[in-house]
Image: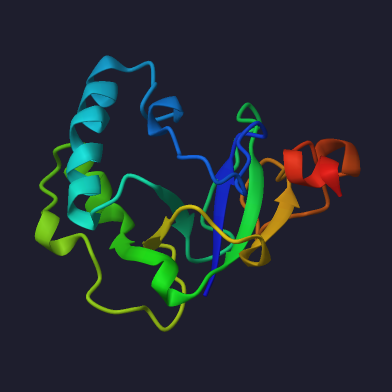
Length: 163
């Protein structure tokens, strides 16, 4: 299944090392309430999927708003279904996270969706195999479909520099 994920240029998505989720943008957000809430809810999510080694992915290529001030590299993943820990309802996670009435028993889909949707995300097991990964470079700000018109000097991730 094709999925899309976005990470800082310094994160080597093909590294076999563990993901340190305490380095993520949500773990370290400035808003104290949101930071505490995220830090409380993320371990509960990890417990439910029995892993803290996951990549948060979109199931459609244009699901993410790309902010000019966020330095990130886009990756297209083509992973076997066995690599997907869970499909989840994006808004249900937001409702759980921010105490808006979300319910854990409604978070995960019971089966693989036939098509990607804006409201459905995927939690992909890490590490990945190189044949599953395609670097898309730095997205241009705004909503896409994913726009890879960025010039080569903007393709500043580790994998692209190596090619």
